[in-house]
Amino acid sequence: MTTAITAHTIFRAEGFSCPSCVHKIEKQVGRLKGVTNVEVHFASARIEVDHDESQTTVDEIVAAIARAGYTATPSAF
Figure 1 (cartoon, rainbow, N blue to C red):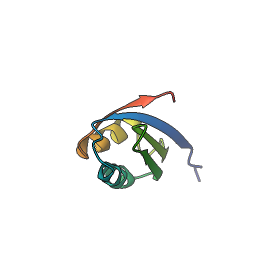
Figure 2 (figure 1 turned 90 degrees about the horizontal axis):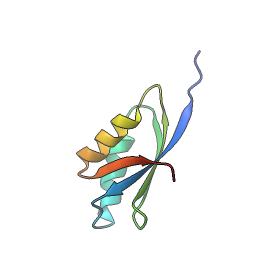
Figure 3 (figure 1 turned 135 degrees about the vertical axis):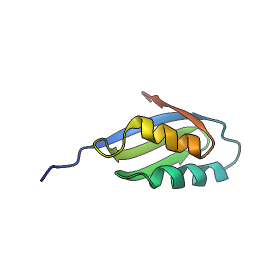
Figure 4 (figure 1 turned 45 degrees about the horizontal axis):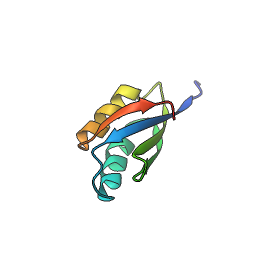
C-alpha cells in the first residue's frame, strides 16, 4: 500500500470582492480528489490547500480556482 504524501500549498488570489468568494473557492477546490483541507483567507487573499500531490496537482487546483472565477498563483508565503 502506498502512503499518501500530503502537500501544503499556498496560493495568492486576485479578484476577491466579498466574503462569499470564500465559499465559492472552498467548494470548487474541495471537490478535487486528494484535497483534504481548503482555507481561504479573505483579508489577505491567501488560499491554503492540503492535498495529495499524486492525486491533485497544483495546476489542477489553480484551474479549480479559475472555475470559481478567480486567478491564483502558487506562493512561497
